[in-house]
Length: 546
Image (tube, rainbow, N blue to C red):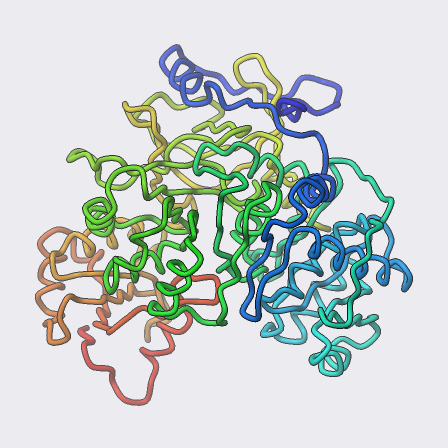
């Protein structure tokens, strides 16, 4: 066992110091107190194989066609790993996994890990050019695909070796590959969008995964746990779902459809007695609005990805009681979750829900101008701990900007600069205040989109909202707001009047569009592109005011 050894890097020379006054230092010591905790100093392969040996007959995986025990899942992954090694997959290679949610997907991820290779989770819906770019960036020459998709994938990705994965064609092999790697080996690579239009590859170490799921503060994970796998595998929430179950001897239930339908979600959660569930903020809000009883039987409901609505949290607290809903926050670069906030009560003096305190083996700091911020002062959130990525693939400048070394309270820390703004509340919680780059300029005025959204959400008739910008006819930008009201015939003019009473004229959106819903991307976030496209439709949409 090891206790978060990633506090300092083996480099010479003292790093720049982050200064701190007494109040700031005391507040940050309290924020990070007790976060260091022992966790296994091994990789995902060893932890999963230990569970397979210990709980061979227990159910590991439930899929739409049946279930697999730990022993069977392990043996099928061993067989696929042996086949992969035969065709040249070696430790350290990057293997693209182009398989939708299925038993074959989980077998493929395990087999890749067993080979000592790194898995690149990809989505078949991505354009060919994007797929080829990501494979080139990672040096991935081997692709795992469903057998039925083999020819199509081979045609889309010429020059790559495409291996079919078909559960019924695999045999149960008792012998695992002999590879035993290091906790600092790369387990997988996620890609996030880049500000320059070039996706940024984020490699994640085995250590980061283990730190995420071992004895977590934010949820109970053990052999009795049942987790629903709902997120696309290319979305980092899947890291928590998959390994949170399989590294504890728990049960992983695969959601049976590509798209979420609330009636089917309710049946799946109830039938399999799911104990822990993660939902994106947008999907959580939809459930709360339309069918809150869907989540009635779930022990812990994790939700995050965007700022939370206090209106929805009030409803959730009333429906489920305290400590059932946990807000989680964290960038991909820090292995999925970094902070958590169990919703126990909503304080009247809070204008937004806190993102809380660091999870185990994670440290958080609020920094402004190279000094720690005292409670109440807004600064940038910096994160530290063994969950941090080693940096962006092939992007040394971006890595040097976002991953920095500093001395804090006499300790050398490797830190990730999140670009998120927050302050420490008097209660000791981090409170999110938007992005450093969430500031826009309209006619020379600086505007924070979050402030406009906050006042929209405060209107009693508004169930959900989304605020963004779009080009105007003058060649500049204008604010555009999209609102889901409590009734179909709600007059958008009353909502605009509400904003006009609370905001200066330059902060009132030029376009306010009333909609039946907010479209979501495959990762469960609001689809900004689709919303803006709806404004450009040939016929003017109902509910638009200008």
